[in-house]
Length: 226
Image (tube, rainbow, N blue to C red):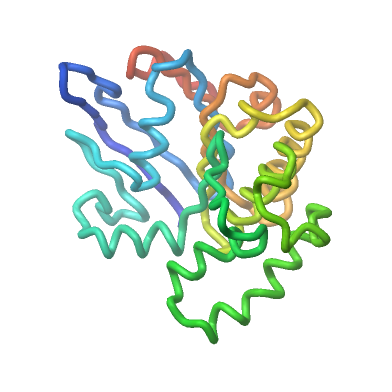
């Protein structure tokens, strides 16, 4: 991915609710874009639309010049699995799966081949080792702390080697120590691998290393600071 962009994105819901109004934004490789705004300002909706988890009522999303909002579901899923990683506020780990199985889940969806998936097992263990969780690989989510669950969610977002990671309030439900770990993680991956991040948050500490800050209010961009 060299560039992801949204042009004139509007999202309307039943009942006359407009979550986004004519929002245009550009994400380039290596960016750390932080979207700030009060609850209900449209941060999550923007992440979901750019990440192909939702579709706009009006407007378009482009990936390297290709309008991906008009692709069929299978093509959209292919882009999501190959190019996008997601970290959510509440992690969404599958309680019936172990730590390493949760991390491998995107690969099961992407590859649908046991032989190929097996080859990635060592990569999953390597990621767990980097986050000091290798000894917990066979544990279930109910036995993890909030910080540990976040680390698992981070590993899951990285397992397919995405071009961009979308993070929605990634520090919203974890303690200060785990938040510091996440800040370090973002900076390290950006500096060493040129990883692109698109982060919706209330946490102003992200502003310290953002390449671009987008301020949303009532579904509209108030200002962009670079």
